[in-house]
Image 1 (cartoon, protein in one colour):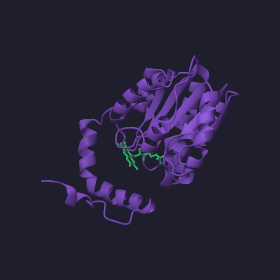
Image 2: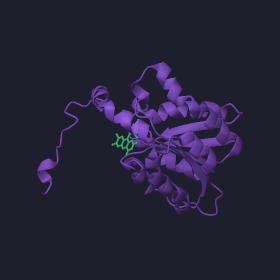
Image 3: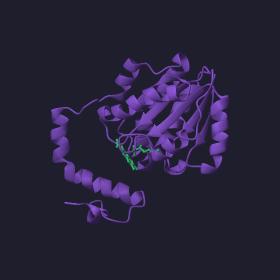
Image 4: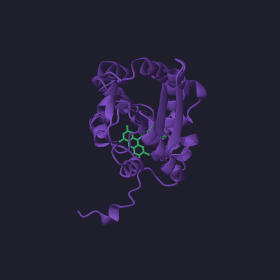
Length: 221
Ligand SMILES: Cc1cc2nc3c(=O)[nH]c(=O)nc-3n(C[C@H](O)[C@H](O)[C@H](O)COP(=O)(O)O)c2cc1C
């Protein structure tokens, strides 16, 4: 079977967590003798080709990061350029990953994705979701492997079942919520977390303070 993948992050390949996750997922998917091809929405000059491929393929996966509780703007923009398929038996699955660890905050976007394929004249093939992916691109290779390796098995699973079953996905996505104990320790270590976020922000090219409020002047009290 052939899987046509669209990576929906606005970040370039080298800086994208979605891309590192996809690498493992594809290895698992291809280990069963399948093939994949991946296209990137940040390459806007390829949108025409991606659209053509969208209409040609009937097994499609959109891989996306959670941006402000929903799909990235670039993905919304691309979706608006698609016309629904006519009389097709195309199936669309989703790989949704986010920065924060609790799966609960990916659920709103998941609900949206459940409805999306029908608008495109396609069938919904489930959503694989997972949080805690924030640091994938800038941690050491050993820790990165720990975070991304589980996606190998999910790639294999998708190849064998051609559907992300809810029970399997929910188990993979754990924790749904932090326990009280985890929240307590997270509060205790909050200054350390802040320090880490500053380091990550610098690595991502952030020059200002993380407490900056550039739009504060426009807020009416
Ligand atoms: C503008 C922006 C908004 C984000 N919003 C969320 C969010 O609402 N919830 C969350 O868990 N992670 C959020 N994240 C973190 C990303 O989902 C996470 O880092 C993801 O792995 C990024 O994948 P990418 O590098 O392929 O874009 C946000 C990141 C950015 C840059």
